[in-house]
Image (tube, rainbow, N blue to C red; front, top):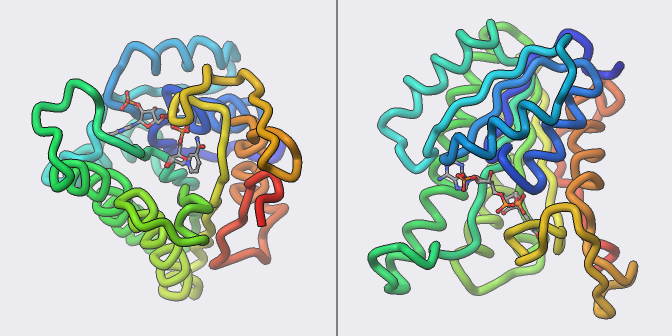
Length: 243
Ligand SMILES: NC(=O)c1ccc[n+]([C@@H]2O[C@H](COP(=O)([O-])OP(=O)(O)OC[C@H]3O[C@@H](n4cnc5c(N)ncnc54)[C@H](OP(=O)(O)O)[C@@H]3O)[C@@H](O)[C@H]2O)c1
């Protein structure tokens, strides 16, 4: 087992890529703390792990609530007894339909607050704690939209995630903390209006289909494990070959 004895915090773990990563990490021996805003689907993921040998905690946590971020991270740290691996996965691409303010400015703030601001403060705080222990792995979820350039809040936020991932990696390398990112292309999740896990053909992609959340989770496992011990400061593209 590649993550035996490791403790991992995965944000946005109730569905899609985060859920697949949680199941993959648990199968490889990790104890988990899983977060999302809605507690119900998190409980389902914890039940789906189905391995009584693993400690699985869930926490309803709105990452946009940055004033309470330190408190929530403290709770997570204590629940797990330390965090070896952070997967900063939670992200949004648009305003939810029920959002009270449908203006472009509200959409900009909503997307940036979750995708970039919350990710920044979460990774900053986790990195400091890991640096003090001289050990840790941080994985960010960017997007190939951030690499290829997309003139919208989502693309801007993910460009920021890629730059921050590189910058953070340089700052913490000497303290034994490894930082990398993943830039998926289209993945068959709710974000792409796909039912989680259902394959989706796409003639515009060289591989002819969206990636599956499990295929992104496999890359997260590689980056979380010692298999990638000499990989640092990179964002790995998982986008069905889209040039
Ligand atoms: N799917 C794709 O095609 C694709 C492509 C490129 C990059 N990505 C990136 O990969 C990551 C995961 O995407 P996905 O497709 O798995 O998305 P998803 O299926 O929509 O799941 C998103 C997860 O994030 C959580 N979340 C959203 N807002 C949150 C908040 N404010 N606080 C805490 N948790 C929150 C959601 O739970 P709640 O709603 O209950 O909070 C859910 O667990 C994202 O960063 C996304 O940008 C996805």
